[in-house]
Image 1 (cartoon, one colour):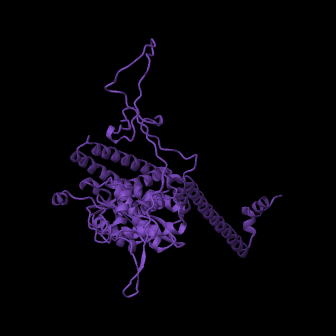
Image 2: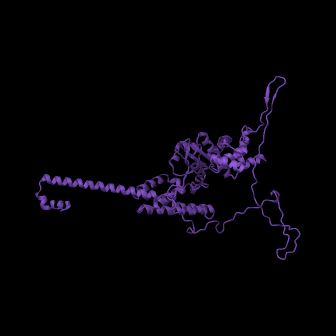
Length: 493
């Protein structure tokens, strides 16, 4: 007979009646102990189930439902389908405006070779004459590059009167080192913009330009360019802090084997970078300075001190809503509804940008959508999913930051501008592991600021940095990174 059968037999009604009071109390205490043990085990099972669900959720996180970058997605990650059901073929799409290389004017061509047929391709008869409009075909080529080397021979002479020895000095604008301003600019761009390692820069200069350069000379050129860019970068920083709208973002960095953060501020006049040891309010305050316009950012708490108008990034919100929609039960239903409203907002916004929807009509649409979204978020605070409830409460706490773009022209609903600007820094960090000194961090800030701002205003960054280096050699201020206003142009004219 099994133990359970013995227990059942032992505790029949007749058997219980035959037991003494003390024996009954002992049985009750034993049963109570067993019940408490089972309750603890059940609670433990629930905890383990929650942990399993959380681990499964983490495994399902990728770039479409979290802040993880697309590069972290596995090969089997589901890709978002494009419009048209994802059936679009690679390459140019129907209606796409093609890009063709324009022919250079004849006067800009280095060499012209005229070709005439000698015989008719049909009958073989001899051909003669001139074609007033021959078909033009141009071939671009890079000639073998030989460095230009200028030697300065500094003579030293003895004075016949006093016997003193005097050595000639270098002319103004001639660098004391072996490299001229354009070569310094090229080295800085290869390492700071095209993100080549110093050994790769060394190889490129030797293979393409026939210029031998040591690793130490590359660092010296970076330092020279950094010094030349110091003043215009500071000017660009001040201009960015005076803009009407500023997009801010940050990413991890390394400085001298210590953790740091690289911050970016993108405005209509300049894009500036800052490397700081902190990620919190101290660094954010330094980045923003006296800025008082609309701050566009994600929901990172480091920006919470800012009291001016703000716009939270809807691209981040969409990823959160996607994660909500993947929960079970009522939480998933609310998340799916929020995701649908988010996509509707983006559809209307794209029409506003394309000019197919008037902004006043868009505003009317958005008032109703705002009420529905905030209502769903309030439901989300009581959906039964603890993580989602906390997220909805945090979003509702700053709900006014979701809708600034609706009422203020020039404000985007996403922070994609800053995220695109910071992406080259992420690629640089992965290849170089950051900067190895404070001076190296200053070079990173300045070269990235110069390159991004020049690109922003369609300026040739090589020419600009060369001009900055020339100005430093002559003791003059470097040219400004900021666009020249029409008023200044009128004054110069």
